[in-house]
Image (cartoon, rainbow, N blue to C red):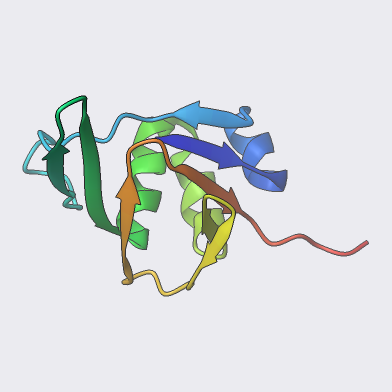
Length: 112
């Protein structure tokens, strides 16, 4: 999955985007669960997964451990968009992602 970062989040992580491979073989001690199903057609296999928004943010923190304390504070107030479509900001909401989706994480923008 391709994660896109904006504003303050991009400054903290020091990247505009990041490819993160979501797998179903995560260690049991992880705080989140990902449900992955495979749809196989004659030509290819496409992965679909269901995940809660808070768990998606946990994955971003896990992939960027060196910034965890800053990310803990900031991600609580971020908006999420999948393929440029905003998602409800309920952290417990379970969303469905498809292989190749772009996940945008948008922190609040302050006026100045």
